[in-house]
Image (spheres, rainbow, N blue to C red):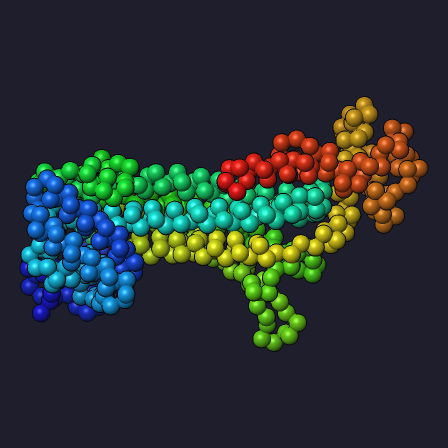
Length: 459
Ligand code: ARG
């Protein structure tokens, strides 16, 4: 016979396959602790409004404390016969405390219960993730500080463009991560609303106090429409979208680390503990971690599409489709959490090779724009200056020299405006120092930016 909580209405049990197909306990058991937290708040509220006796509340609290222990020490037995985390815990509670356990679900549905659980779970996950984003930012800032003056070529189209500092480059990622944190913190505001009290979809006949439940669970307020409360998962989609962006940022950094570690660049080295070897090529040291981050960005993008597709066209209110929200959401939380954690550590283990970067900045005429700007400051219209410098570059290329390596007499053949004061302008250091405004790559500005971030992060 079937021992389902709702089997009274049915004349035959579900088939084994249907049981497995509809059960969610194998993955939603991850919400056990928040499920218990939600139940305890619900029970306390029921007691306060006179629906549940003090003895029943005490019995529920005692039973739940034991269940929590069992779950934490791994002795709780999950059963797919009981479908999901909610019914597993409720059944166990009733086994432990009898009728009080059966009274817990008064004025509640699994629909508002699960929506509450996901929000509690996600709120906790966001707080952990926000801490990890800061940690990664701190480790990037540390690198930036060490290399506030380390010259490297900045690229556009992956072609040498203009000199920048490695510190400036790291700070670009600190900014991106800062926006990721803002997005997550903003999504958290909409996560942190209480669905409980919506019951199945229309509310309940008991004189519940939803504000009390919200307060007990640390929610900022209640979902104000019962249909919306049980049916929408937009908060999970928002979180996943913010996560996909964070992963996208990390995938860009990953791509750069992979390129920079290639001997063709040779800009950096990554500590051995983040790399692996080859089973056939003895010389290999591969940047597996950044490669995997690139790859795992695909999973998170996939989760976002899964959740959007799951919600699309769903009629109000709750539909079982929503049970499919959990695995993509949990996978996103796990992937982003692990990625941030490993990245914060890995960036601390990045060794910069300033010589290789300095060599690269001398290939590709990185200071050509500086020469054009120099001519403009001497009165030439920018377009004419551009043309003159382009000719100088062509000449230098034929001579196999960088602009800074040309003699003054050679340079002067391109314009009578070019005089001895051009020489410092054409060095990478001169180029850097002249970009001295908010957001510019001048070491002075890089240091100011680092100071601003340190203050923001309380470092
Ligand atoms: N396991 C379900 C879920 O994840 C819980 C809610 C089920 N509600 C229902 N009426 N079948 O969404």
